[in-house]
Image (cartoon, rainbow, N blue to C red; front, side, top):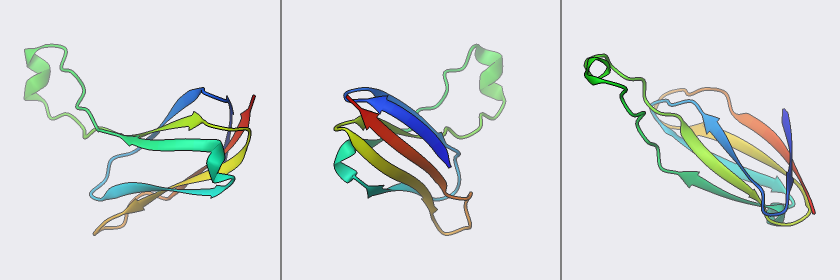
Length: 97
């Protein structure tokens, strides 16, 4: 399990790999300590015309986490979909003043 420390108001992005389904996030512990939102996926910008001819990998899914109040919460990023996805990822967040 990853451990991350944030200050109130500080934000950190978490990337999870692409797959054929959708990622969700579960918050355990002091849920009011963090504000989590899923960002829209964006395709990488091609550097030149040659790169457009090669197939680009799908973009990661990104969740933005903001420290909202002092406390501890555990985030569990869970893949959901029609096919087996990657293993869930857990992150323990400690928010300080």
